[in-house]
Length: 96
Image (cartoon, rainbow, N blue to C red; front, side, top):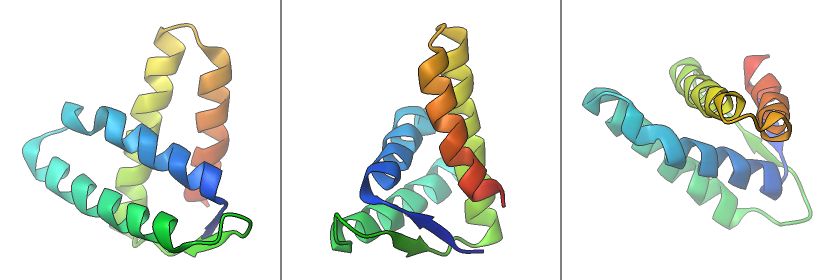
């Protein structure tokens, strides 16, 4: 699986994962932290005007989707439909 993302979308994913990673169990937190470090490394190396190809493994993609889904649910509970829509659009890229 290859996900192409610009720097803004990638930073959005990093922000969302970072905001909710503490809500998961300790074992998953370790895996999520490793994914965060990988995504931050990709973000720092990429050209801001280009899209980066991210190749998460199936387990990583599953955890990213799980985190983004939880973040999206928090937006919905807070009544912030625009935020939920934005996260939903990013989630679609990882669901393919």
